[in-house]
Image (cartoon, each protein chain N blue to C red):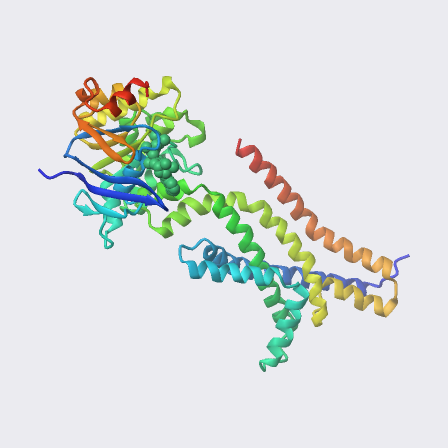
Length: 242
Length: 217
Ligand SMILES: Nc1ncnc2c1ncn2[C@@H]1O[C@H](COP(=O)(O)OP(=O)(O)OP(=O)(O)O)[C@@H](O)[C@H]1O
Ligand SMILES: [Mg+2]
């Protein structure tokens, strides 16, 4: 079966600075790919390119059959297939949890109010926050907010989920609840790409680990790769405790 | 002993009504035009951004008095003389308000974090939905106090419309004063009228501001 995400020799510069210097990797259907690497190595940029939030300078990216590098890309169709969750949750502060989740299904998929509400409760159940439907984002803890952000994405029934360091802003005792939700998703067969600093999580949940170093994929392999790093760079990265 | 008779007082009250009317025209017209200019200022199209910025710069750099003369005599030269002064005055104040409201609202729209646009985009909302369902509701909350504050400025600025013969509150005061020459009581009454219009708005604006600060911990 063909890959859900495939990057081929992707180059991306901001001004004169080349941030991605020929990135290539694939994500198979139902697979979880963890992208790791030092700060500034281009992980977020790669993820943003996958979701067409940045335009690439050269190379090819295909996501769920959509050619991201194609100027004629149908962004709306892409958005229907891909969900993304950011480190900073980005919930809409003027809407309740339930309204946050209902907004896109109602506006984009034209679901009726009652269908959208049922859907909101279904996804909230999935992230264990059914009782927070009426709360506003500011009333939530970081872990709860992030789970709502995940639920909001899931409500659009994406085929692929992208996560950019979704636990990095959280207190250590709150990361567990978010990682559990992601692990459930992975076990449910969702294709996922996650940028993460949680090495233990990557080792346990990811089918594949991609180690980025200075804008390139330095090393990739199964989770076990983290126990037996081949390259000097990965060894250094892992021993630095990050 | 009241120096004004009832008819003169009514004349002032009538002028006050015109001040309210002109303020409303300026505010409604200025809001519609100003909102369009504000959207233009944050457009993704460079030319539209430039056009909106130029509009704001030119209008903000021109005294209202000059705008009033320009529109009054300009319209007359174009062959539409005998237009009621309220049209020229309303147009000048609309143009004037549009530039200031656009700039206030641009700031409010831009103070909503970019990540909110991005989150809405990633959920599949189109530009229109992003603007009206995500950005505008948040900007509105920030925009209300300075907008109400500007409304007070508009009310006071309507007094300049007297230069093109529009009889609003200040001009009515002058007319009555020309008849009976009792400037102090007359203009005290005029000031009271202005105060009665502006003070509640100022209070409202201030209370909105307080609420906003409490709400945004
Ligand atoms: N919009 C931008 N404009 C200019 N430079 C940028 C932009 N976004 C990222 N960069 C630069 O690109 C490089 C890679 O950034 P990126 O955010 O992809 O790194 P990262 O691997 O996600 O790091 P971190 O672990 O800190 O999140 C950095 O040097 C960063 O300063
Ligand atoms: Mg990053």
